[in-house]
Length: 256
Ligand code: PEP
Image (tube, rainbow, N blue to C red; front, side, top):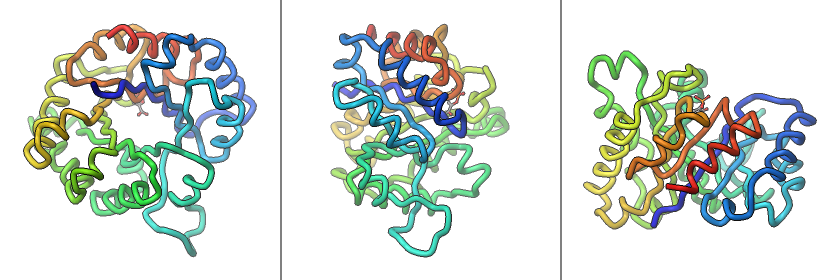
């Protein structure tokens, strides 16, 4: 059975005090029975990773992760944070290739492949994001583009390395817009991604890779999206900033 995952992407939001308040609320709200069945991850801004993790403690059942890392190992890269640094503070996951990184910071397939390697080298699981802009979907190019993104970012890996990766399908037109993909659109693309993985890595490997859906997931639509056979959880932006709503989303994953 694939790991069920609900990850919150806080992006560049909240002061430290606000972040700690949200963390404390979530720690109190996430019930014991949820913790074992769904992996819950909070992707916090770099300065909050250690304080948030320390507040959660060992037994909260909630993990903390980074939103990005450098493709470089170390050196004169002012402002960057390396995978080795994230490893040294115990980060188990890192988001890579989020559409905002692709769009605003020019991250392309080549750079992302290097970032994937950097994370894996340090034993950090990448949450690799892919997804098409609206005009590409309107021109029916979405499947080809997402397959290309997956190829560019991941297809240089061998089976053992790929098995350590989590994929998040996030249609760009659904991120932060309040417009969610229908469960059929999500399932169709997740199935395309899984079949594409199977074509290179075999069905057994493809069947083990968690593929999360992201794009305006909220408490009202999570259950239907998470019920799709190839949707193994969610990467949640805006709704992860509200403890009650995020807890509802996590609960939606428990029941499927
Ligand atoms: C995201 O940041 O990955 C995301 C999906 O954002 P939102 O849920 O706000 O659309």
